[in-house]
Length: 214
Image (cartoon, rainbow, N blue to C red; front, side):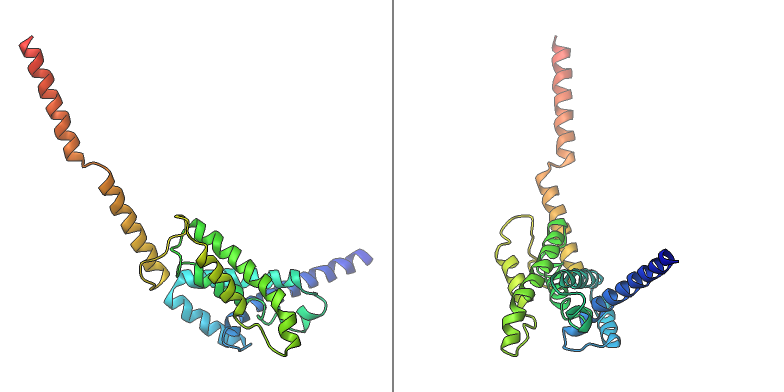
């Protein structure tokens, strides 16, 4: 009987935990505008999906990273339950970081995806560092962790793996333009097939003429 009770309690705790984390991920979007309401968050998510499905996917990824990292950095029994993590406060900086780097300021590829994950972690860690001194002053860090984290990644992105778009529009267009440019460069570097065929035919004619002379 004891084991059955513990099992039921454990399953109930896991279910509540998943629901609370999911709530934090959803509410992270509305917290960008200082609102902690699920209908508002869902409407904004739908608007982002219409604008760019890639941005919406990265928004969910960044919010999940920020929420889970917030749980690791805070006391689950006190602050996380009372508010902060489950109401999206710790997730929206990761959400903004992921949307910023995930296809907007970096063309979508695997290095950019890794940068998104790292920047989402970094912005949440910066939030953890700033929240205490700001709380003593009666202030909130708001989106400062996102600004610092994203700016750092944009400043150090000098490698050829992180590609910047020529003009910032939306992720799908950046990806399409990059692939078109890459395909064009590949075609310019490779010699035309017709020229190779002409060279082969010329070599065959020379060989035949030499055979006839012999």
